[in-house]
Image (cartoon, rainbow, N blue to C red):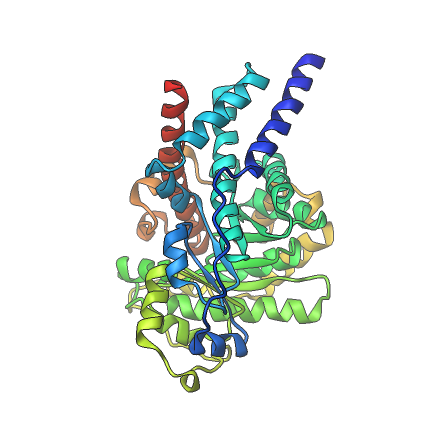
Length: 419
């Protein structure tokens, strides 16, 4: 038993060393030029981030006003599939096996994925002197202890630069509360409603929460619930108002709102004033090409966008995305008094059932497989009455990450089996 523990400790030390060590660290980019329109966004309260893990792509778009980059396992998978990390993966596998020959294959893959993600993020951080939001393996999304463990590992690699992305699951809420108590910066990702983010800010206090607005517009349009226009924008502004309310009323709440999953430059203008934008390269390139006048950019935080839903649509099923009613506030308050760090995912699910807030559906493996097959935009009719739209969208997002992560993991397994 002592030998196994010793090997595990040595393995952790080797993984940490490998994660820190870049063989070909990129040179720091020269001072970038400013963009007047981005500068105006900063003035009205929006911090722009770039949503890519591709270093060359980021170099071409970087401006002085950008402060961070976001990566995820889908973006990391694209880098890995290119073959650029093959030598790094093989050498890391050799080193880990030398210290811990008995390491299970699944654990070795988790370690190697962690090392690869760290290298991608460190290259970005070094090239731009910026913070980088790094994502956990989706396989730990419902495991509080593993989530906390990997959050600590990422933080140890770069405490000043890494913001740890943790997916929004019942266990995620609990893990975020524990991680934040240790001072680790957290981006609580895969949010799709104001109420999800209100609970997150109150219960766990992450640094950032998200609304994936482009997908919300798409799910309404694709399922013929309405024309899909301004759904995500309305939700993002409602969530912004909710977290800002908590931030101003409760000194211990640091949470800021991210508008994510942007589809076009119009959304950057429509949401000016939201705390943070994480902007896909295509959207930022469009914004630069358009060159909006700074005078045309003003805060839209108080904007009331109209959402047009179909006559046959269950309007309450969509309006839950931007509504935080008194019953939900009571549910959130009760959980907050118990303390997120003291709770389990089962506790949150039980409280959800007791209050009738319908925030957490019980998806079984067959249900998750069906959601995964549909991709990021689920079949809403199939889940009507069984899952709220925000929860369904979060599950679909998590399952899409599982699909990309499976390709990432398979590539890594193939390399280490051939080694």
